[in-house]
Length: 272
Image (cartoon, rainbow, N blue to C red; front, side, top):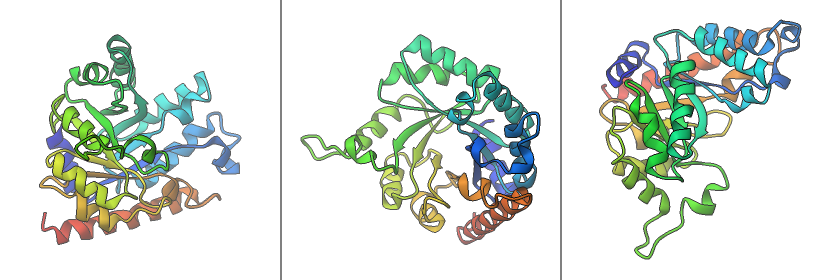
């Protein structure tokens, strides 16, 4: 999916919601545990309930890899089931030497046919650019995360007082452009979103942390909005586990709809 198609979907659905498919087998409702593939059965119901409100889905690969071959089968079936008008993100956080990255890219862009993959920038340009050699595919680079350990490295300053995450942004922005490169920016560091936006004004941001993690959707939009919206706001637990009963999909749909309604209000206020 290219940028124009993504923006068109945001306008059509009046939403910039991404639903994270971080499907924990231990949290799948009891009535689905007897299914042949409980993970896929759960994901299928979630997708059916949220597809009118979400423009993107983000399977977290770790939740599938840990299940071995069956997990990869569940992942493939899930991705194949996601509507074609939705942007699909493989949340894999890969990044390795060039030839290894090429094969990671083949996995997510050719075998699974995802639109984007999350990538760690630590090993530098030659670990990232192999992902950018696939047309209409995206790299989503970790920029400013909201976990506690982010303070270990991301805010270290050089002799001029510039934080490491800003140096990563400035350098990595030269590896691609706003048509094939996005950034992960955590919602719980709202003012940080504004700092990132100053450095990469045209790029899309994938923003986790709204919902169960306490990030403010209004703050994300205030600091991160650009001329094309420029935001994919991810909600995982607050949607997936809105209920643990037989009504889990209905409650997931209600939560996704509530977020979409808030997003529609923001879009209206932005006169976009």
